[in-house]
Image (cartoon, rainbow, N blue to C red; front, side):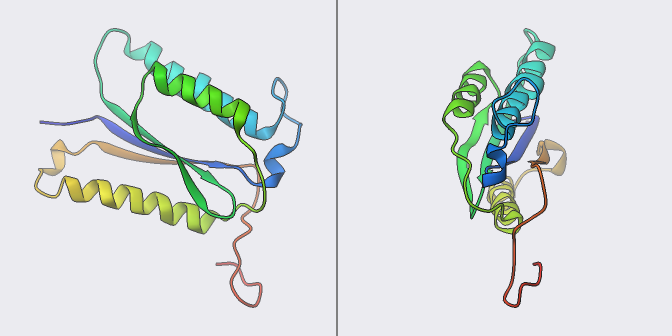
Length: 148
């Protein structure tokens, strides 16, 4: 039996440029990212499902110098909605936006999750979605200032 329908892994840029105040209706780009995630993604999904029961999991990774876990495999529900709105007020964007480390972090989350389903039929494993909410270009660099 299918344990969940989807697992959304969302990376939100929390580099210093996300402090900029240039998005109508929000105090900063960071506020816009969290607010849009809560209102246009989570709430919209919850309203559409109505009384039907789905088990959708959400992982949110915050990206700056490294990737850090904000929520891990939380069910998509009104509790998650409130957590995201609370984080909108408390997030502190800083430093650089290193995409590679955050994407590798997301890849590890997905691969670890898939290991749990190794004995399942492919039809019984829910879909995965990777979303990156960012305002700019990566800060990732290798030795010699070459992009990774």
